[in-house]
Length: 315
Ligand code: 8YV
Image 1: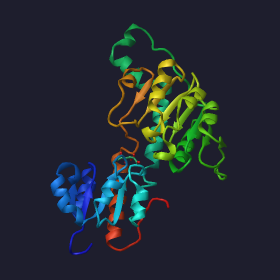
Image 2 (image 1 turned 180 degrees about the vertical axis):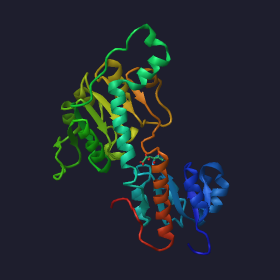
Image 3 (image 1 turned 60 degrees about the vertical axis):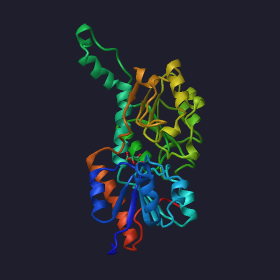
């Protein structure tokens, strides 16, 4: 990088592996816009890049406060928190970290699906609570040979489908358009898919286009024997409708890694026994998070070296 270190705003907490790489190469302003508005106002005209995470927000207002901004690099495959249109309007590229987290998110999706069906967390609580001493636990729901519906058949959706085949699951999906090269049954919308499956796994990008896609109608179609698994974004599911469906027995259960207002999880969900909850850990292994951090940093480095970006978000 150039002799004069570029100044970079990091908008959310990032792992030490990434922070160390950044500090080795650029001048880091760690959440200055949140922690010290006066210092931020002074530094803003010099900030040339923003580092964000999959969950963080880079709204048009923040972009407008950074007149020297040249690029935004996201530690995550999802970039729904970034106002990409506002960035593009100023010719500011946005990068993300596709590919490196497919396996982890797909692993977690299957893990959550099996946890919900076989009630593994509940069984763990049953043993720890001494309940086993009083009698056997009720039987659960079989996974092998059942019907899986995948909402979103991108890279991670395909990794989920591949794993499901090993469980002899019958895989169907919905997406904006059919994928001619894939052997799975296509349904034109989420409700039609939900009506045809036992497990509905959501792995579609967040943002305006998918907000509330999994609504009361879709949950009704999934039915009293059906399970919902969400490893995408909380925004894709109408959370109040989901709570109502779980309370009414409209669906059998759910396993959720993402929520409408993280890290806040509604008390209703916390209280339910037929729900498995995890704290947005889809990509949360050391190996994958380091690969994501490397790619996040490599995009930044490429930009300041005048090289092509490795993984810009799709046009
Ligand atoms: C987060 C994610 O980025 O990749 C995504 O879109 O949501 C996650 O991998 C990760 O939790 C770091 O914030």
